[in-house]
Each structure stands twice: as C-alpha cells, then as structure tokens.
Picture 1 (cartoon, rainbow, N blue to C red):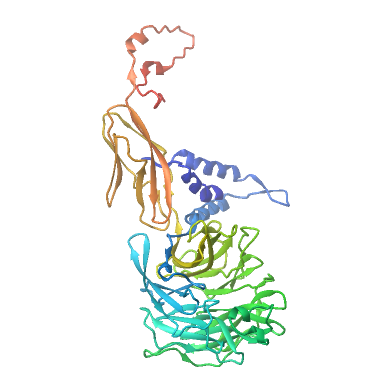
Picture 2: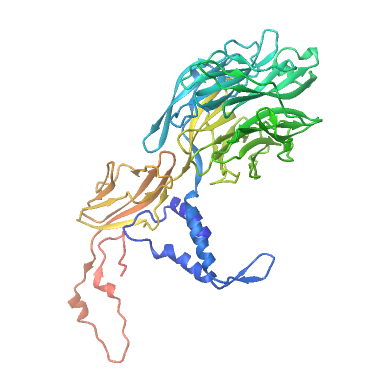
Length: 617
C-alpha cells in the first residue's frame, strides 16, 4: 500500500497514465489498494529471521495508508536551478572562489550579494543581485554594477584573497586576506549597508603572534561578528613570497594553527568595532586548520575545523559562547582526508548546526544536535576534493541544501545538489546534477545561501570552459521544487460526436504540491484544423469541431516555471454507429423451443469510424 500510493503516481504520470477525464477515479485506481488490503488483513506475513507472523487487525494497515498519503506530496521534492548568469565576463576573469550571501537578514529584503576576486587576484569585488518576487513562480534577479571592497591591492594574486561574506540585520560584511608590501598576510573585515554602501574602511582583524593570517571565515552571532582564520609561521627563507609558496610543504617548513576574534556590529554609520582578544580551540598534538563557524539561537556558536596529524585530517568541533569554550573539541567522524575543508550552517527553526566536509573524495555531512551522518555517493573514480557548501532555507520542508562539485571525467565536472532534513536525512530523490557553465566546463567552488522567499536559494560557482583560460563566476537562482503531477483518476483519451462542437477544459488535469501557478500548453503545432487551443487567465481549453470522423494525439504540458510534465491525450471525433435494417435481419431468425440460441447483436450495426474505433457494446 505504501509503495503504491507514494511511488507509483509520479512514474505513471510521466508515462502518460490517465491524463484527462470528466469522471471520478476509475476502479483500476482503487482496486489494487482494496485487494492489497484484503489480502493482508488477517493473513500471514513472513518476517525476516522469524516464521510467519499473523497480523492481528487491519487498523495498522489503515494507519499506514493514511500516513503514506500524508507523505505523498514530498515525492519528487528536488532542487532545480534557473539558467546561470555570467557575472565576470565584462571583467575578463576571476582568480578565486566566489561566495554569496543575502544583503541583509531582513525578511523583506530579497537581494543577494556575490563576492569574488579580480582576475589578477589582487582586489576583492562585489556585485549585488537585484531580486524581485515574480508572480506565481517566485523570484527573478538581475546584476547591478560591480563595486570594490578591498581598499588597496594585495601584492600577491595567487590565491584570490579568499573572501567570506555574511548578512546581518542592516547589511552584509566581508572578510578577506591580503599581503602588504613586506609580504605579510593580514585578515581584513569591512561592513556595508544592504545597498552596498561601505560603513567605514577595512579593519585589520589579525592580532596574534604568528606573522601570517589567511583564509578567514565569518559568522554573525547575536550582536557580534565572529571572525576566524588560519595562522601561519614560516621557518624557511625559501618560503618568502606568495602564499602559494608559503603553503608548499616541499620547500617550506611552517607552523599552522587557528585564531578567532569577536567583533561588534557597526553602529552610528561607523565600521565594526574590535572588542575581544584572540582565542582558538586547542587539541594537543594536532594541527588545526580550515575554520568554519555557525551560530545558535542562544548566542552560542559551533567552531568546526580540521584536526590533523602529520598525514591525515579529521573534522572536529567545539561549542563556544563569546570567547569562552563550552566543550572540548569532539571528532565528528573517523573519516580521513588530506584537506577536509569543512563548512557550517545553522539549521532554521532548530538549535542544530549542519557541518559538511570532504573525506577521501566523498562529500560528508553531519548535523550537530541530531547525529545523522550523510555521505554523498561517489560519482567517479576521480573525485576532486573540494569545499562543499550548505544553504539553510527558512520555511521549507527541506531546510538544508547541500551542494558540492563532482569530477565526472576531467576536465568536466558537475555541481551536485541534495536537499536534507533538519536532522540530516535525505529528502526527495538522489542528488541532482547541474552544470552552470555548460556541458563542457569544469565547475568548482560552489557557494549557496537561502533567500528571503521560502524554498529559494542562490548559488555561485566558478567555471572554466574547455579551450579557455578564463575562470568565470556564475550566479543562479535555485528552488526546492515539486514538479507538477497528474490529477488522480484522469483518462488518457476523450471522445465527442461528429458535427457537435465540444469544448474540453484542461485546468483540473494537473496539480502542484507547492501551490505554484501552472501554465498549460499543447502540441505539436500546428494542431489539426478541427482542434483549437485557447488560454486565458482563468481557463485552458481545447475546442473540437469535426464534420467527419477524425483522431489526433496531442501532448499536454504543465509547467510550474521550474519543471514540466508532459502527457499524451488522444482526442477522437466519432460518428454514431449505423443501424443495419433490423426488419430484414430479424425476419430470418428461426427459434426452436427447447434449443439454446446465441446471436451477436453487433450484427445489427456497422462502424462508420474505420481505423479509429470499434463497436464496444
């Protein structure tokens, strides 16, 4: 019963099952349910590892049926994205990962901002996407002019200054690293209004004993920013120069650790205020790197990071309140990786925190507070170990979207999207693969964020098209969507009499679990001369007027603006059966008392619709 109710309708609909009818659901819909119910009630059911168990009553089956039907609308729940927009073609190229955030946390603010590095890797740039709520289907976004975030160019453009961005009540803030003239790396923080107006200049956040601060991450915890970064201390003269050299273990001997600082939100038009000393989690005998932070409703936060020995890393976390560590670091899993690159996000409506990372080519995911561990399926023998991203969606049946890139045959790769529950469970179908840069592109560095409109998210990626040396930043709107489905009980054909104009209205033919407005269309065009399709704001109807028997199969398509469902509908114009002279036939009938006699009554009529229909009864 469960599998019939919750799995069958969508595949059957995609195969064109029962698209149109003016009648109630046919017996064929209810019979499998009823017969399954009768077969199971009071019968014996084999249970693995035991003998047959007798089901004592039908109450449990009724409950199972009811629960399965309540769950049915979630079938087919999947992320979809609109065609991606190239944000950097006018700038020539990009030289580092892009990140995306809302421009503020106000519920009425639909806009998002994309942060990326210039082509030479020496400036941090931003671009606000002006988004509007479109009727019926959700959102549309258009890019505004690019603006500069860093006050001065970095002397090193190798690794793109690694920006991080987060929204707060009045705007957004960006953290990034850059090198000064002496070759020392610093972490900077700069705040903006929701319109992109800077609130003061960049502020240097790093104040620790190690000379280099790189790869910052940023979160809003109640009324403060928390900024974390990696600290580097080089012990070899050959390490001087670019950050790429600093991180080259073949030529460089360096110490690495973590540091963080609490920074007050801007006030009175000024910039952020530094208000705490540096702090960091400590794990004896291990190197800590790759920081990630996510806030909880009680103003505490999760500090996740890579915990590494000489050869391998695990992902661990600590709980903090301000600068105070509330718990000792805890390993999230036993997975090992050369560079796990964790990310963290709060789960809307809960105190849970989602953490995702890379482990030996697999994208893994765990919800702190729920305990579920999810490991993405491996898509190829070669997987590019790449930082995943987590988007938290408010007001959604799937409050989290996990995305990562999958190298499915170098030099091509795909962006993978998977909706997850607040406890980390899989929702909908298996991961959805998309390629924002086209089918022949290498897609890297995804970043995603949930938007003000429920079920919508924004995503950015970097893509390199084959034959090109230019990295492009792509932006796309995404939506957790349930595709249109066929209304239960529809028939796959409709008939009407020749010479009698008939109108078939298709508006009840499809349904949408999300409540999206559906647009109907038919094809192939042109339609036969005896069929016309008319559509208004209220109705979608096919008018049929044939002077002779005719038949056509049309394809009816329903679109919710993101996904479509097409089913065939056979429309037939039929002439009435023609009676054979009943007097001449009946006069030759000889009936003998006591002897059975059978006669085919169809002999009284002929069918004027050859090749279209037969006499049924």
